[in-house]
Amino acid sequence: MLSAKSLFQEIIDNDESFALFCSIAAGGESQGGWENARIAALVPQSERHLAPKIARHGADEDKHGRIFNALMRKRGLAPVPVPRDTDYTMLLERAGIGLTHDRLRADHPLTVHDLVTYLAHSRVTEQRASEQMELLRRHFADHPDLGRAVKMISHDEDNHLAYCHEELLRLARAGHGRAIQQTLRGYALAEIRIYRDVSLAVMAHMGDLLGWPRARSALLAAGIHAVYAWERFAGWRRMVSLEMPERRDALGGPAVAAPEYA
Image 1 (cartoon, rainbow, N blue to C red):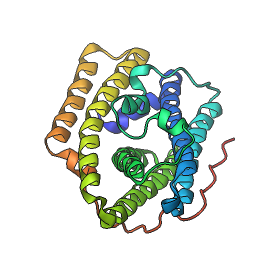
Image 2: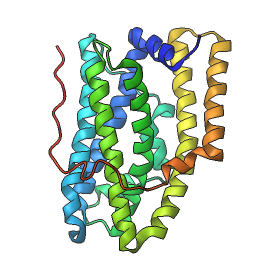
Image 3: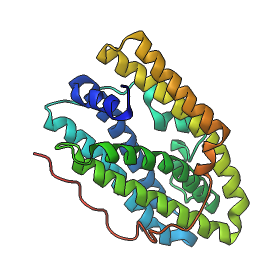
Image 4: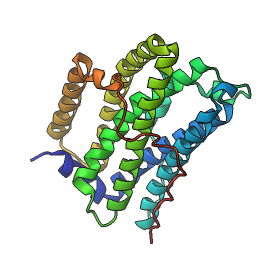
């Protein structure tokens, strides 16, 4: 029977597909680390209290990239090139989601509007990351190699999501509520389309590596399209709602070190 657990297990058990999975994940996390570090450096003076939290966010993302690379090294594997059609972060930027890299490379301070853009981007993408890591934690928390990594990354992604809720609500109370909701809606609708396209591309590459029969690949593609149809109809709304999280000040402390791998 085809299930999320059996699918991930097959990808994890094969060295080539595992290297591709980890390389895609590590690339996206490392990119997020750089972006957050630049944003922390450019926070406007009126919002300087956010800088340590944004820096913590970036440190967490960079740590996740190191974890995925360490998982490959433990199996004697090297990172592989990430196919462009699986590069989620690059495709998000091309779609106009978040702050552009050109803007982040400039050495002049961001505006509060820029921070709304950044936090709305993070709210949408961290929702996705939190859900994906929860799925992996549900199935692989006890895995001898992946368990510690999955639990740590999942905990961090939940913290990131809580932080986005709390800071966006604060900015909404400061008078930016309409801009926040408009930005969130546009980003959510764009993200679900990009996630569909990236998911199709990732499964196509995995199918090539693992020799999946055409019927299985078609079934997986149909499932991805079905998820997109649900998200386009109603599911996107979970990405734009805002509520005060149970985890308050989730990024208020120092980043937790990555686990060691033999």
